[in-house]
Length: 107
Image (cartoon, rainbow, N blue to C red; front, side, top):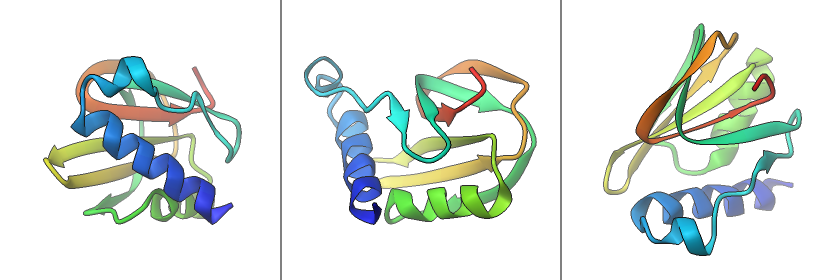
């Protein structure tokens, strides 16, 4: 299962580093933890319970999500090879955001 999250994270990186990849190999629509749905180019809004800067792989974020019983995970591209994630305890809405993606079970 850890390999699945690493593969998902690598797909996420490729998707954001190569804009044309969107039409060729989109991100998986579901995250296997808690049946989360992908919202591309979107930021989920809600109560942030944890933040991880400079993430190395997606497993860091999914483990934090499990630990905090999260409602959503936001991913942000900060630089060419720099990413962070936010763990949200609640979700109250979604806003459009370039360089972002959100996995949530709510919407």
